[in-house]
Length: 231
Image: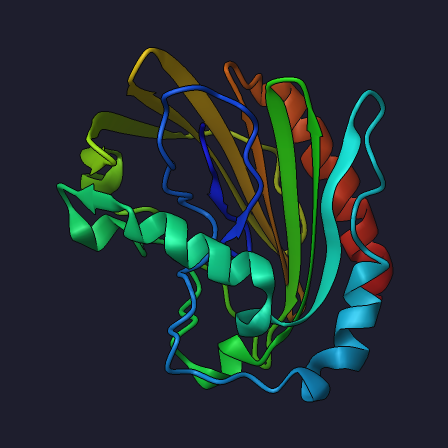
């Protein structure tokens, strides 16, 4: 089983991809620090607005999780992501949180967020929107994190990530394609992060093969919704 953690919420929604452990999301977020106690009540109004910006269920897919709203660090999906990430022993530990929002900071953990996920066969889409107290955007993935290995529950997995030349979305955007090789099968994770104003959208597309063109199309639809709620 492959459990993918990430998207602005290390929210975990896994497509059934046998024998491939969790892949690191180069565009998502660092799992929540359990010592940080977010305040859901402070984030509820913003979270409701963010929920309206989430993608509807894509044709041919079904709702797998959510929508879940609340303080970023308090989301069930965030806590599940923390558990998944802790299973992996990375050759390069610094790559576990590379290019991610820092949820150990209270202002990030308490930020309003909304998460949803869809699935179909051996594919899944996970999306999150986070309203930051100040404009923030993950730094590019460090060069040393483009390829590394990990041991997950006794399985050796190699992760290779490359930048994708996606048309610019929002005010800032990035897209990556990660291939996870290990066990009896490979899997790919397409990831996109977009910022408009103080709202950051993160999305993961997981499958045995992820076509960049399909990822870009989804990113365009997500950005349209993002533009609507940030006007």
